[in-house]
Length: 205
Ligand code: CO
Image (tube, rainbow, N blue to C red):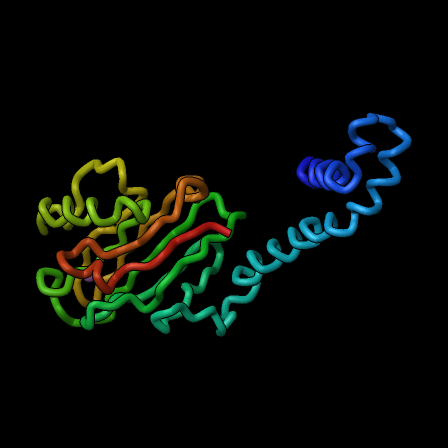
């Protein structure tokens, strides 16, 4: 509401400089209706965004998640959680995760649907700022498999699952507040070399 009022005021000043410089209260009501036309737009947009955010939770099978550039869908989100797959072909089944802003915590479950052991085709999910991914990935590689290719107590890591092999499943939960600001954020697999293909965006809407 404050932004809307400021917007009207700014528009009023832009279209009626005389009214603002004169500071006559009588002028304001005349200028306001002129500026009021664009003002309802953001007010109407808010409910639409809320509806979109709630849709995945309300219906478990939206079925038509937006496809990303690489052809993989956005993760389906239900009850502030999502589950997707990692494969023996070194791929995640999704390309992006959109976390509803209404969620306090969010849970990610990774299911390795392949058959290869963790030493050959390990997968995990590590979340960092996009700008931190490369360095965190390198430090994870240096940490070695005994540490799940994740550097211990790395403050750049917002959340991560354990490293799993074929047939295994792993989950992690984290506060949504950690990725609400300061993005963009990325999720990726820290197994050496995998982040080239196994990565995607995670955002809050
Ligand atoms: Co992997």
